[in-house]
Image (cartoon, rainbow, N blue to C red):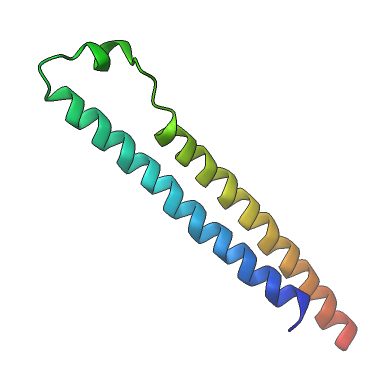
Length: 88
């Protein structure tokens, strides 16, 4: 299997996983704030204590994975272009 095909697969996997992680983080954050609003003690909601970094880190990790996946796909496209030019 050529190297550029492996890069296409790896880049696509990074993009797909990044999208999944991004939306998972958004879902977790919405779920957390929606459940806390309905409680009688909203002090935790107002003061944001204790801090919950998980949803934000999932979203940031998703953005990083998407950007890395796009860069890997670009590199695979360049390698594919070089391979096609050399073959001709």
